[in-house]
Image 1 (tube, one colour):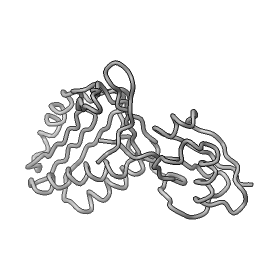
Image 2: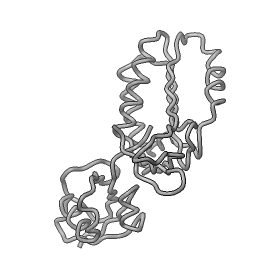
Image 3: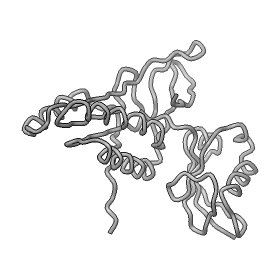
Amino acid sequence: MKKKPKNIFVEGAIPPEKLATSVANHQDRTNIGAHSIFLGQVRADEIDGKVVEAIEFSAYEEMANETYAAIREEVFEKFDLTCAHVYHSLGTIPVGQLCFYVFTSSQRRKQAMAATEYFVEEIKKRVPIFGKELFEGEGHQWKVNS
Amino acid sequence: MVRITMYYFGLIAEKAGVATEQLELLQGADVESVHQALQERYPSLQSDSYQVSVNRKICTNGPVSEGDEVAILPPFAGG
């Protein structure tokens, strides 16, 4: 039976406490020398005089998780990591809240730092996640990654 | 006829007014047929940029078969 891929999605914003918990959970892994962390936070972009107050994230979840699984395999082939944890929010995430979490660990720093960057860039490019930027007052536009 | 299940996302779903539907294409259908069917069914999509996936893999060409899961994907915005 084909193994079901990991689900990277969480409903709602990623709580800041998750970071502290992750660090604490790795403290008994004494072969780890470095963690490299990326946190994506929703920004109050101003577009044509309107200000973003939240982003509503949706995704083609099955394809997104399969694509993430492929990216994760690439990361573990290219970089010498002890572990990696990635989460992305679904639903309406207000400005100032976290929507994207990448946490990699390795014996030495360069592997973790390079792996985190690879995860961030490849996920933004290849994973079918969609974002509706909700403006203060009313109206919205669809976010496009640059 | 080739019957496929369409999934729409983001701006595409907003313009189509649905998230999913069944489409029937002629025998020998391919990714190009999907583009054509989509443009005919939803003319407002003509200026929009999107990718097509077949069974959860991005496809720029190739055949489309009975029972395939075809998604119309606007530009990604993850992260």
